[in-house]
Length: 72
Image 1 (cartoon, rainbow, N blue to C red):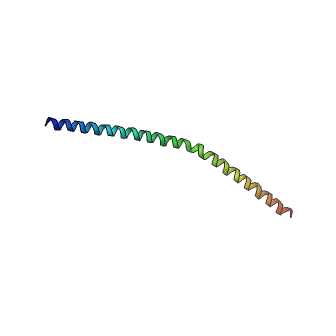
Image 2: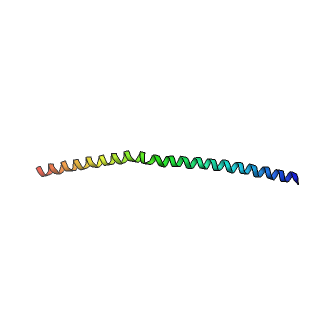
Image 3: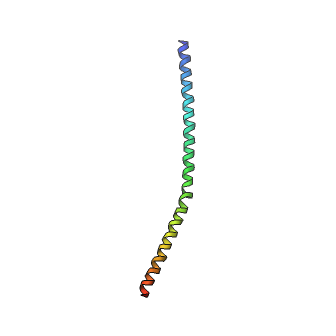
């Protein structure tokens, strides 16, 4: 009976160690995900600036084309 209790205690201790390790790994995963989220604005901002520049260039081309049509 004493041996069974000892085995049970060991199994529970091992299970708790595994749970602790899993918790630690999940905390690291959440930390990495937060870091990725912080990078998103840094990645998106240059793309937004490029789109603005392209829209501005398109507007200038359109204006120039309209002026050329008016001058015909």
